[in-house]
Length: 127
Image 1 (tube, rainbow, N blue to C red):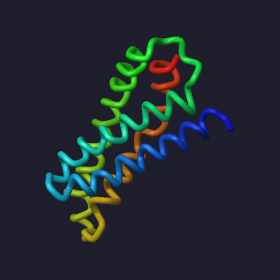
Image 2 (image 1 turned 180 degrees about the vertical axis):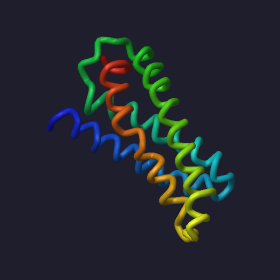
Image 3 (image 1 turned 120 degrees about the vertical axis):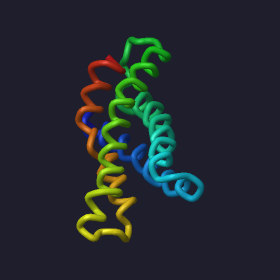
């Protein structure tokens, strides 16, 4: 399987963990904070899965890879959070979309940084 396909599959698994855990966090916490906490569920699973299945040949030490992974994903978190909150709190209510809006907004937000994350991890994290 080619590297990009592996990245998308593994990223999809970690995105699913991210997205689904947000529903659990939202039981006790605000939507905005739940996005941040669920992101770290996806971040942890994503790093381990990427290291095992996608970018096994990196010559960087494990902790250096982890630091770069965190850095690249902090940019992804900013994009995810901004898009998710804007859609759920501003755009969707303005057009009358309320039922399921938080989940759809978060899914769109998680999907937004796919390509920037791939290139960031390929050329920085796991190089």
